[in-house]
Image 1 (cartoon, rainbow, N blue to C red):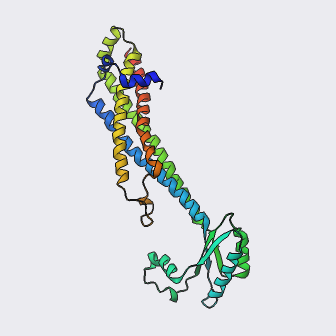
Image 2 (cartoon, rainbow, N blue to C red; image 1 turned 30 degrees about the vertical axis):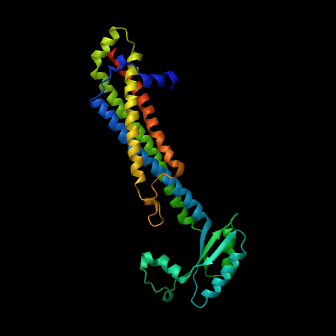
Image 3 (spheres, one colour; image 1 turned 90 degrees about the vertical axis):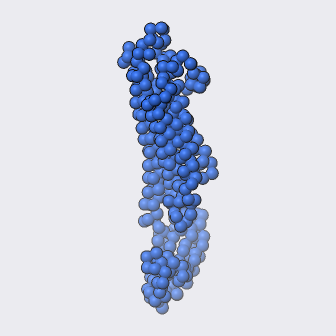
Length: 299
């Protein structure tokens, strides 16, 4: 928009504004549609940003962690565990290693088998946590050495299930962005319908304006201004309500996982402020196109 166009949107023309009904069905539809869509856009934006953070965190945390599983008989397991720990400490690119205690392994199995699992009486493999350093280690070379020196050791770098998790989070981020585009399209469609209804209802007034010398551009600007301001106000209210609803959601926690992380973080709270402006731009374009097309039909 040019500076003159922006100035005319806010200053307007008292005579031209009479062409557009200040209240009624079209005004209510524009306000409600822009407000509801802005409210939904805030949640779609929060979903997209939260999914992006989740994908980045999973990719970072899981890429640096691996698990070494030692499946051996009870009498050989301690010796193989010590040998595996020694090999891992000697491997370039391994930042730290740690053998999980029986209590930690029991806690990992508790969600499936209960808290009273007698792990010392079961043939549960010994787990070793491996944290990768910078640069990383050679996983294939490490597997070959472990196969030769610790026959019961199996290295799992989480690649099999890390990739689907990251891809799922990335897909959620894309879904949020697509939802925002669909919301924008639906807003444009409803505002176009409201503008067409207002133009049709004021066909006789438009004819009189033409008879006294008003040009179609002058008439169209009146509709564009009124509908753009309505969309801006409605979207502003919807955005405020959406941000309030997001602020009332539970804070992110390890126990709640992804469902408690659907919020904005830091400067992310400033991003929804663009929604009313984008809604006004959508209304400006949609109303301008609808007004020009409708005025040509009324010619």
